[in-house]
Amino acid sequence: MSDKKMDVVVLGAGIVGVSVAYAARQQGLSVVLVDRREPGSETSYGNAGILSSGSISPLNNPSLWSALPKYLTNRHAALRWNIGWSLRNADWVIRFLANAIPSHTKPRAAALHGLIGASLKLHQDWIVKAGAANRIRETGWLKAWRSDAVEAAMREQALLTEFGIESQLLDRQAISALEPNILPVYKVGLLHSQTASVDSPGSVVKAYANMFAGAGGEIRQSDIKSIVPGDEGWRVVLDDATLLARHVVVALGPWSADILRPLGYRVPLAFERGYHREFKPNPARSLQRPIHDADGSFLMTPMEQGIRVTSGVELTDRDAPSSFAQIDAVEPMAREVVEFGEQVGDTWRGARPTLPDSLPMIGPAPRHAGLWLAFGNQHIGFTTGPATGAAIAAMIKGMPPPFDVTAFAPSRYI
Ligand SMILES: Cc1cc2nc3c(=O)[nH]c(=O)nc-3n(C[C@H](O)[C@H](O)[C@H](O)COP(=O)(O)OP(=O)(O)OC[C@H]3O[C@@H](n4cnc5c(N)ncnc54)[C@H](O)[C@@H]3O)c2cc1C
Image 1 (tube, rainbow, N blue to C red):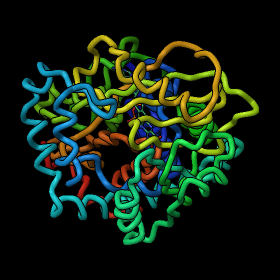
Image 2 (cartoon, protein in one colour):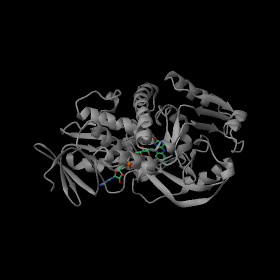
Image 3 (cartoon, rainbow, N blue to C red):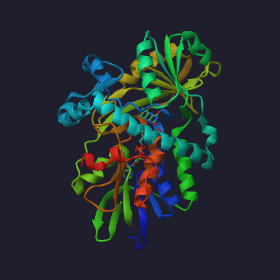
Image 4 (cartoon, rainbow, N blue to C red):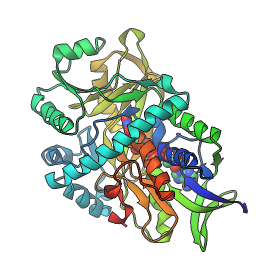
């Protein structure tokens, strides 16, 4: 056991944990960041790399009700659900659906808008300081419909406008002008013009982790076994050592609930699993920006390695065996949009950690001093990691967070 007591031990080195660690170090705190893998190797590696200004509408919004009949068939590319998991987690499913009503949607959109806005400012600053500015593309994000979905696009645009987020409604010709290398399959488009993306989210997280180490932080590669409260702080039990800390931050993404269970916290965390496949690009047919095929329920993003196609949501146990049905179904649809070559590497699987209101937990654990929770960032964790981290660091220091964290209080569920 190390005798040295750290101010903060951060558990998990995904985008959220790395951000907490760097922000805490910037506050002058001594910090150790622990992960069993290299920083940015799990969920924060395999996402679509979108730094989305416009993802303010949680997935469980009122439009979910009209989509539900097609989802119940369990054949739709947007959502597959495991019956056993759904029965065992009926409580989560009911609470998730109960939030999909108008009166619960606007307040959550406002809360997410605050979190996203603060986070994008930090990304802009950090990515330059971390020497990774070459990875960012300020070309927006295109949501596109094969059907004549002008009304849906306009509804989405109206919500964005309400929050001062710019977007442009596009017809077939305008889409072709914007993305000259895709085939004309889309009738309607909505360009989220204030959205950026990166060509390797895992590398960006690693660059932020290096920036943390460069600022005097310590990174440790160990398996975290448990956290034990004491009279004056915490013992963090690793497979190869025990660390002492005044504050512990749980930023373990989809693994966060496990470590909290022995302390009596039952966190209603579900796993919206998703897959990606990468393909050799055709240099003459490159994409300029990520494209969300709204009717096909998949995303295509130009990445360092090639074109990354990501799938919709699979609701099941975090560690259940992979099912490639969704990604198999969308791959031919992606080939209808842009020409690309054979698959590069294996199919990747990750799990978006999601609470029933689709808002993360950002704040103190209700019954333990010095225990902080930073997880549940669902579909937009790569976007929202930095401000999640900055808020936790500020709260540890007893300072006001950079956005209103009221809606993210862990005490709403535990
Ligand atoms: C297909 C897909 C596409 C996505 N696209 C986007 C997007 O375009 N934009 C966006 O903003 N978000 C996107 N997301 C969401 C985003 O990827 C996640 O919200 C985010 O990565 C979560 O980060 P995290 O730090 O909470 O978790 P993670 O990145 O999973 O980090 C948790 C860390 O904890 C470590 N860990 C767990 N248990 C232990 C233990 N016992 N001991 C030691 N270490 C442990 C793991 O090794 C891991 O490194 C997408 C997600 C998916 C699945």
